[in-house]
Image (cartoon, rainbow, N blue to C red; front, side, top):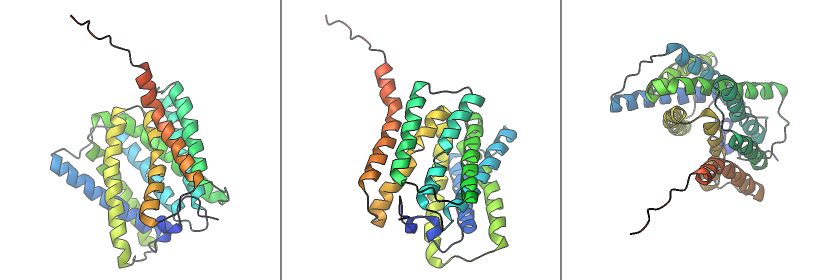
Length: 278
């Protein structure tokens, strides 16, 4: 009954590596990725707005640690964890309107509920999570939203590599310190998945940072819902996990929410008359 979206094989709690070790490996590999890409592109890793960069890094680190703790909780259905985490884009949309005066207008009012309903249909949460896990995951979602608000303010003036590197340094130190308190050496079989996870997330962080420099925060928040759909697809293709009607319906709702913006822009685009033929 707990296999609502993914089996435990596809969650970090299925690994024999404790969650602080997984978080530390993700952060350290992400740090190396940011450093390497910066050297390849010849860009500086210094930040010109340290206060904003620290805000992004501190809240991002809190979100990372709380999220990995939640996904590493073995006794909570993964659908509940995914649904609680999916509230982050809602917080982003609200905070971007209040703090950044950014708004997607009626498109956000249509796309945001549609995407969230799609997540509910997709993961089918049981809402049986214990109170402390619910509180931690909501804290993770809110911290992630605040981090993205800082990211939106700092991205236009900084390189993606410098922002990700700044965040990765802090998250590496914090997660490693927690992991060392009760260190458990992960088995050799876990090393490759941990490394690949760090590489994928490191590259994803660079792409997300650049995206927030180019587009309003509410719009990027809705696009983030597609990550859950892609996870479902990869779980089906790579892990041979069954896919049901509710998962297809939920995925279509999320994808439909993401299509609200390009379709609206296409409809609103002025028609340029063709020059008259001579």
